[in-house]
Image (cartoon, rainbow, N blue to C red):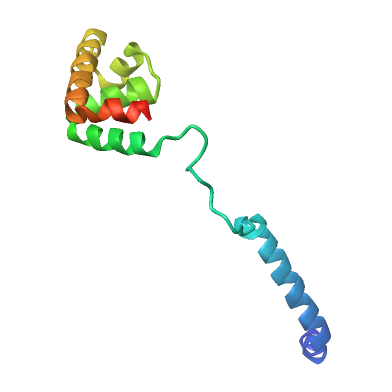
Length: 120
């Protein structure tokens, strides 16, 4: 009991402890090192073509789920035909055929837009 009364009797020590704990708590936050800037960056990042990415995502949504899975695993995840076949439980020859047909479907969905998007 005696210690509790000593803390109450010393508002200066209480304030110092509160300030130190608040400071330490703020330093632990991830956003502590962030600094506001007056200008926004021009693009999403180096080498990122936002229009092409959005167009591809929309076109992939139009494909069958298995076609989409094959294309994403082959070209976005950069996996071999054998790895994709193992992942999807198919034969490698089926994956090769599915890849070719899925690319044809993707080109049909994108239409003439693909040439314009890649040229930019």
